[in-house]
Length: 213
Image (cartoon, rainbow, N blue to C red; front, side, top):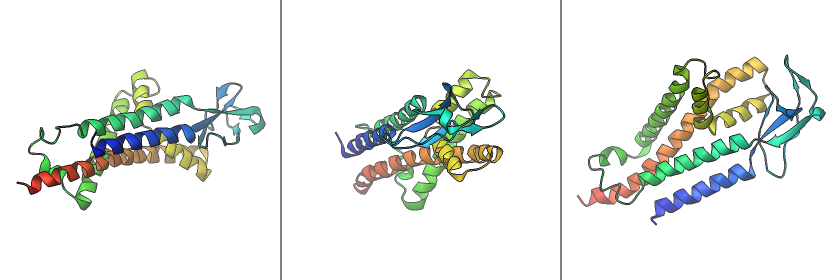
């Protein structure tokens, strides 16, 4: 097994371990997740956060009336996102991939800021494409397929944005606004990071081949 693939496997195992050791938590009231204050962010597995309760037009729940539990659905989506990113990198660095892609060496082997711009461009293009699927179907909350796309393609961006908004102690409307602005950008940066790592490793593999020409 080549060195890039070893790094991919090691990074994937580490990321999955972090999902388990620092999982997302939620709070429930009478067995139902709170609508506006359900997200409690990521905390250590052995040190769960304290309930905060919720006072909204839907419910008035005191912290003592709420229970804090893990969010298995979010953990599953985050794990799938990590494994999917690893699978893409694994495919890019498969044996013989370089020899089978003549003509692409010059663009992929670019270095410095050009490579960063390439990665950002591809990452934001991926995010825009994924976001256009649910938005193009109308109301994503009324379309099961659109909601499925949002749930399974916006990790870890949605949880990072939710944790950031929670830490800022914003009002409900202001918090929703900032969340909708932040999470697509965070997710696009995540995709860009995966692309950048792929370009860096692929550029190192292509450099010796170009020197021998």
